[in-house]
Length: 486
Picture 1 (cartoon, helix red, strand yellow):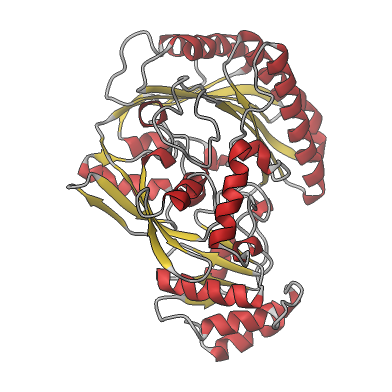
Picture 2: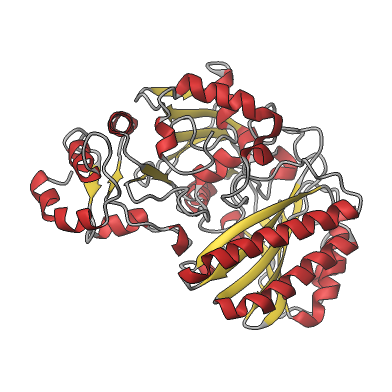
């Protein structure tokens, strides 16, 4: 733990970036109070310290803010102490897991940054066929720990994604067609309630809170551990293929055929239309949950002349790390989304046209990368799980189209965010005009832009979630943190 002497040496710098005073003193005073209250398993860090910089850093630079101090709790009990002090002093804070949130302020703050990096254990219980892992990990860490054991979990598809926000928001995986969303495989959450109490939440111990945590993000406290179902894991087949703009139509056709004809739940793809360096292109992630796919599933993709390809039989971790998601790490970024029922030829053409339109238009506003991720899933995608905060309606499957814009200049923030909103609106109208009944389709919270209304994510579940929130956080302590606030 930082000594109070060390804390005082950072006062001048911390005050310079301190937000408004909380009712019971400055945020810096709260940092010192926490430093004197937590155990030796935890630490408080200040600007100019190396660990502080790690604690506030995010995958998107636009999601990074200068906190007055950062805290790395080492025990759930210390998280409880921290939450009690933050609630009593009404101090703004944020909780960061892997740091992959694209929405500004969702896991960052100018108040007190809590970094969950010390919650990094992974354990496998062969008897219960479950895996328990800490909320400070990224999925790469979990897969690496499980690989020697021949088991796996339903988690992230690309490298660098944190387990916490991903899971608490839903979690679309390479294995989702087989087993559902990540939340559909959760057996228990270790949760620190806003009053500081540490509790184990299961479907039997607390069904309301269990329901709320499955898609309810950080509204109910701080999750320190997840226990999820484990599944046998062999080698898999797949990888990344890139194509130049000459083959966009061919990739469109192959994507449409896959989305409308392939029913094997072990097969999955992500088709990413992108605009980079003044030119449209496409990258293709292929996945089959086995060493060799049956003939016919991916043949159309493999027949197209590629620019690069690393498709092979490999470990699951190797395939996840083949994704290019870290290529734009450190730039400013925003996500948004459209929920579709299906992909048609006209819909894929519209997505491709949007990629080129915004790529050409936003180049003068410091745009570095424009992309649209087409993620087909089977119509049965929501049939694997039970009642949960997200999705509010499991009677029909939804396909979350991910819009992702990256740029360099802070002065372009509003322009990029507005463009993402315009594009999502246009594609929604295009889908409706094509006969898709998606006017009230729930948006995926992990992709949705920060201005999205809560009703667009939670639908008819919103009132129930707010009631549960009032029961477990009557003082609205978690309202001091960013995110989708109930």
